[in-house]
Length: 102
Image 1: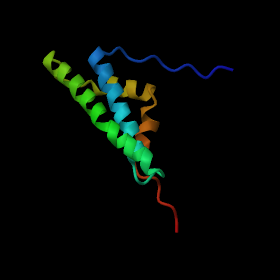
Image 2: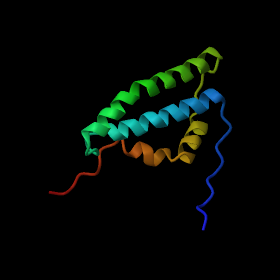
Image 3: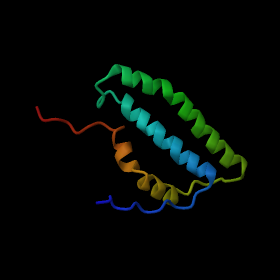
Image 4: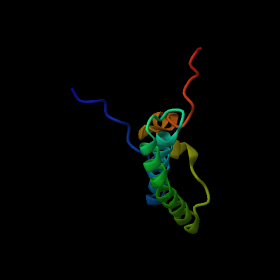
């Protein structure tokens, strides 16, 4: 049985795609660094080391958009793309887990 088909991504410029991709990579890395969820210092260290490259990629994509005269981020469209790419689950790892009753 095949998994359900994902909805199509909205039409994005190449720079918008790079913004979404780098943003999600950053979120994934922050989720690995999150001390409230992690268990392995080495994995957190590796994620922290990879973070600057992804932040630079995000900055560069936003710079390209700004230089082209793209002054707005179309939040609704970008949110659809993030949801399609499992952004809700991925960003959830950056938050604190629910408090455990004592």
